[in-house]
Structure formats: C-alpha cells, structure tokens
Amino acid sequence: MLQSEPIPLQILSHSLLNERRVHVAVLRLDKIHPVVSGNKFYKLKYNLEEAKRLEEKTLLTFGGAFSNHIYATASAAKLAGFQSIGIIRAEDADKGNPTLAHAQTMGMELHFISRESYRQKNSPEFLKNLKAQFGDFYLIPEGGTNEFAIKGTKEIMSDSYSEFTHICVSIGTGGTFAGLAASIKSHQSLIGFSSLKGEFIHEEISNLLETNKIQTKASHEIRTEYHFGGYGKHKKELINFMGWFYEEFKMPLDPIYTGKMVFGTWDLIEKNHFPPNSKVLLIHTGGLQGNTGFAAKTGIDLPIL
Image (cartoon, rainbow, N blue to C red; front, side, top):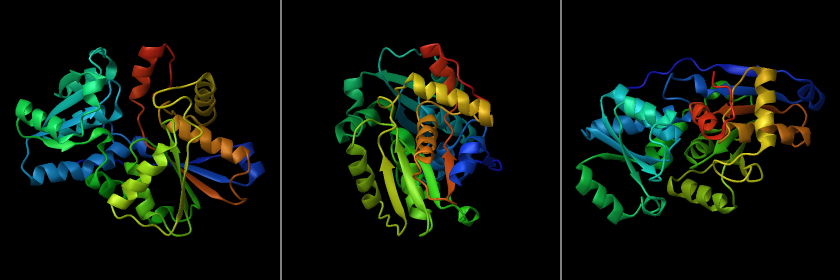
C-alpha cells in the first residue's frame, strides 16, 4: 500500500572512531519515503492493511502539535484513500504550525482538546465518546505503537545487517525498540535511548515486550541519561552537537529523537563503552519534518535536508 524507496546505509568516518577501533554506520530510514518517513513507515504499513481489511473509511489517531505521527498518518491516509482525524493535545496549540498545516493539507480533520482530557485518551469511556462524535473509525494509538506497528518494525532489521554487533535506536512509545528486539540476532546487542525523562520507561518497555510475547536471546538495554530535560526538551549542548554532526557527516538529525540517540552513542564511544572492532548500527528514525516547527517555536534553525 505504501511503496518504500531504497534505504541508504551511510558509513561514518572520523578520527575518534579510528582511535577507538569502532565502526559506525547509519541506516537512513529518513530516506524511506518522501512524507511517511522513518519508523512511521513501518508502524503504519500494517495498520493501513488492517484498516482496509476491516473496510474502515476513516483513521483516527492522537498526537501533539508538532507530532511526527500526526504528520505521517495524515500523509499515509491521503495516499491510501482514507479519511483521517487527528486529536491534538493542547487547545492553545498553533493551528497553523508547519506540522498541523501539512496534516490539514493532507485532508486530516483536526480536533484540539485540553491536556487533561488528552490524558484520558486510552479510557473506554473516552473512546466511546469519540465513536459517538465521529462515527466508525480505525483507531491508531498515539505514536502508532500497537501489534501491527510492531509487526512492521520487525522488518527494519534483516540478514543484510547481521554483521553489526550493536544496534542503537531512540525510544518514544517503544514500538520500534520492540520490533528490533524481536528481530535482532543472538550475537547482537540492542541499545535504546529514551527521549523521555524518568526510569518508568524500563517498566513500559518490559510490559510492551511481554504483551506482544517478544522474547529475545540477544542482549538489550535502555539508556535514560540522554533525555536533555525530557520529551520535547533540549539543551544548547545537544543543539551544538547536532550542528557539528551535520557539518561533519552532512546528516540532519532531529532534537526529539535521533539527536539524543546519536549524541548518546557518540558519548558512549568516547567513554570506551564499545569493545574494539565493534560494528555499531544507528537507526535514523526520521522525524525531520519537526525541525521546521522547532525553528518556528524556538528560533533555532536546524538542517532538514
């Protein structure tokens, strides 16, 4: 239903990597599709197929005012012939920001609710009220993470990447981490970098793996020290690193997910976390559309191409 472009594997060359004898490459999922970018392509792929199988006409989902998920779902719905509804957190959101403007261009009907109401989004009563308001729809949860999303993200890793010893990825709702955990080889180690502040993410990921019956013989860990203040937060150190990384490798990152993950990985390399001759694969999960909105909100320009 969605057609992917060839996914480049970009090899990084730098004196630090030579000194530490660590090989690093980046799987550029940001290049997989013009508008359904990164891990969102995989998360939406089988959800669209399931909605089509159920003969639903409308997709409904949730997200913030600068959400990659809202942007991607609106785009995917348009391409696949669905109507779409976005329930947006925060009544005071700028309805004309680049993310929401694109969603509306794609035909998504936006409804803004308070943060308090938004916290009820998973309750049966709240969903019942949405059905009464909008009629039948196919529900895609915030961030897109459900069993169909994980079915998709399992496909990110293939035998083509079996040479890598360590796989690094950012964590939001955990669907991509879960899919990778289910598909990596026994000799590989999966490292997730949480974009959220707090240790609760360990329990959330554990519950996600258990619910989806994911057992892996490979090792996996979650790093929680690179959140830079929490979800959607940033510090000058992160922005400076992203600017340096772009100048060095001509690769844009986003400050919500990939910037923090790459910063964390680079810091671990500097601290000799990876044994000599390790082969590290960074998963670039896209999200670059948010850089335009980030600039509008903060005045900080970030590379987007």
